[in-house]
Image (cartoon, rainbow, N blue to C red; front, side, top):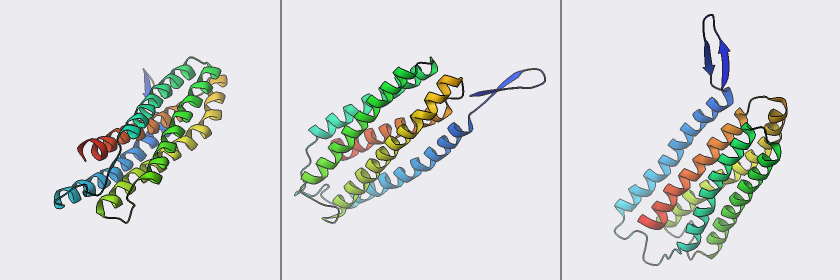
Amino acid sequence: MMVVPTADRVEPVPDRIVFGMVLFLASEVMFFGALFGAYFFLRVQTPVWPPRDITLDAVEPALATVLLVASSGTMVLAERAAARGDPRRTTALIGVTAVLGLLFVASQIRGWLVDDFGISTNAYGTMFYAMTGFHALHVTAGLVLMVSTLPVALSAIRSGGSLGQLRATAYYWHFVDVVWVALFATLFVLR
């Protein structure tokens, strides 16, 4: 947040990149909302959901969920370290966040390889792979965003500049975490 002085007071102005990320995330809410809407529409229309021949192991996805939620915590700590002006801790915490994210994506890919159904097996398979696949793409994009944001954040720490890009990246990362929690609850708990 930047501070802009006026004639008689100082008014905070949000960083443009943070504002842009919030707008982008609003569109992503609509995108994932459409996927959830399609899933629940099909679920209501189908007598047996998921089909009897589909088995899902929830243990590994639950562990992957813990990793992804923990990565939100390490991202918060990275933001705090950056705000305190600690580049080494910021780098280490973003590294830990990225490793947790990579482990999550690896778990997703492993799950897809061992599932006994595919995207074209039935409507359930189509929705399962569309929802988890688009989410995995978003996590991967978040990892790329993290790696590209780190040098900018380190430069801002050294120069006392704005940490808006790091904050925007953190918002994105927390968003993909929240979406996954909703996906996990939908696909593995509610079924």
